[in-house]
Image (cartoon, rainbow, N blue to C red):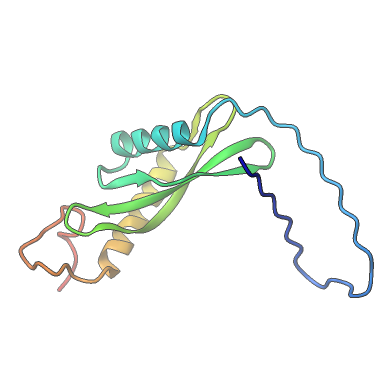
Length: 135
């Protein structure tokens, strides 16, 4: 399996100068991406809303290694509507790093995305989350 790491430098970069970067990271990854995605989807369905699911996670190495799982708003009639947030899962313990406040923010963003989504092709199709859409 190929691994890819990226270092991004922002701000002025000195042209003509040699840049040497050495990075050593040690992280114990006990939870795989698929498990992290399932855990987030389970948390979303039980704590936030049933039209929200986890998408393909990215491994983020910071203070701790976490799987960052994008949250997708879905619709029975339209499929995926858009990304409405992200939830982290500790890559060692498998703990979903989310609370009620994050759940509320994700739900608020989901309502915003739902309101701005184009109308479904079938005017008889109604999604519970989209039912409050004006007009």
